[in-house]
Image 1 (cartoon, rainbow, N blue to C red):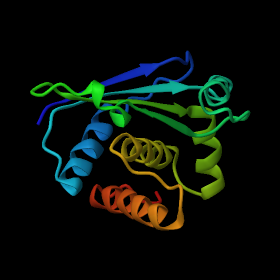
Image 2: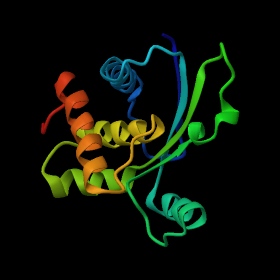
Image 3: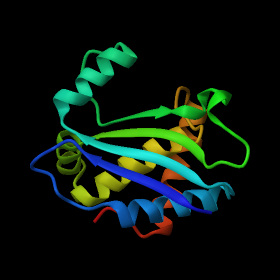
Length: 153
């Protein structure tokens, strides 16, 4: 399995590197979900203003949020047999991640890993629109992060 992960930083004052840990999270998620396909995805680091604009434009929700995923596989037209699965884009608000890390009493690193894992699971078809789906998705998040020992540090 090959993974093509593009990290795009739209912020001048953010220079942390998450490529290695995000690749580990992808591999662990694929192991957990028995996915062996080649995958392509992007992660875009933005501020609260930008994620607010995206949330308003694409989801008609007029506020900022922590993470937004755009899953390309919501439509079969994006998959071509024998090619890598282009699963989509994850936008992470660095401002929100900092706030939530402080609010929840864990590290910024842990929050960035949690938000990425959450977004990744959305790209892989998980959702939390009802209580049962939420239990499944959040359980998977915990399993993946625990397996990599990314805990409440």
